[in-house]
Amino acid sequence: MAALNVRGTVRVPGDKSISHRALMLGALAEGESSVRGILDSADVRSTRSVLNALGADIPELGSVTTIAGGGLKGLRASGSALDCGNSGTTARLLAGLVAGNDFTSRFVGDDSLSRRPMKRVAEPLTYMGARCEFDRDDGLPMTVHGAGLRSIDWETGSSSAQVKSAILLAGLTSGVKVRVTEKRRSRDHTERMLRAMGVDVENDGTQVCLRPARRLAPLDMDIPADPSSAAYFAALCTVARNGVLDLPEVCLNPTRSGFVEALSRMGGDIEVISASFSGEESTGTLRVRSAELTGIEITEEEVPALIDELPLLACVAAAAGVELVVTGAQELRAKESDRIATVVSNLRSVGAQAEEHPDGLRVWGGRRTLGGSVDPRGDHRIAMAFGILGAATGNRITVESRECVGVSYPAFWTDLSRVAA
Ligand code: S3P
Image (cartoon, rainbow, N blue to C red; front, side, top):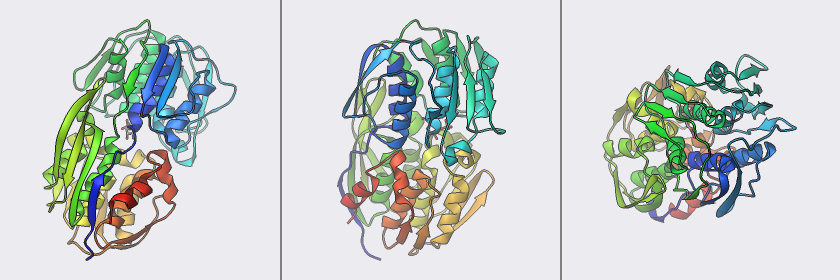
């Protein structure tokens, strides 16, 4: 096997979830928000263009993005359908945001997004008083007829930051109290950002309560580096023969740190060498060194904090030749692709041993040289996970339609070739 060396520093781009929310809440603030380090990717551009179609005034995304907020009731009807592209966060959060406005909005998206479930947001919004119509049984296109909404106390029975945030945004723009109870705590960026803007939002783990706010103070924030993007390089460095890599300014929010915890449990060597705060979010530099790994099991309670990193974790197990068992992760089937099926079929096609379960997967087998072609089915996280597997020692893997990484990390391939020698 050739010895893979991984050295240097990668400042991965701004966090995708936080970037979406900064644009949405900045558009609703009173006054001018200043957002530094926003992620400029296809998904965040979708949020920008939908907000602008609704009457917001958000300039091209840059190193500093200045947003002139129009207030909580500042949006108006769009003359055309709202194209959310590939972005579930855009469609689901903005459905909540427009539901309390007295106008109609039609949401459309690409083929992948059109297949993803939207009833999970339509149900609580309908309960609050909006009317949501589907062209088909579920998914996009979806038309939301906004109305004056009423208060809600909603139990999701699942763990989804997108559903929770849609309800919070509907409550915010219609001035009613909302409470959401989840099965497990999902990422809490919406709550943190709202708090920074002066809103009374309590979050005691699985229960979130938002009280009516009259106005949002503008944002003045630095977007931390995306832990989901940093995870690819942490994984690469871990499985390298010789690796030391620094990943600065990574968001250390505990609702997002599941990958670092899982990798550490496998024997990975990751330390936080400096930590600070960026608004309501904590950030830090991760220093990663190569390490020998062992197998682990991931169970339902851990899933929300590493849901987007599970395809990568499967590739890490395959690269290291250790066993990984994931259960309680059926939500993976409702992502940009059916990620259980996509990961397992692609692992098999490059020669790894893997099997699908209804709610998860298993990867096993000794360390071996893997090779072949991978079809990520247009899913950015699958393309990047297999990009890492391909770069790992001795593996010859070709990832098809590599450009799909543009929805979350346009410079991924360039950054990968810079640090892996
Ligand atoms: C996101 C929430 C998660 C995650 C997605 C981004 C968000 O989805 O998978 O990539 O920004 O709120 P769910 O809330 O559907 O789990």
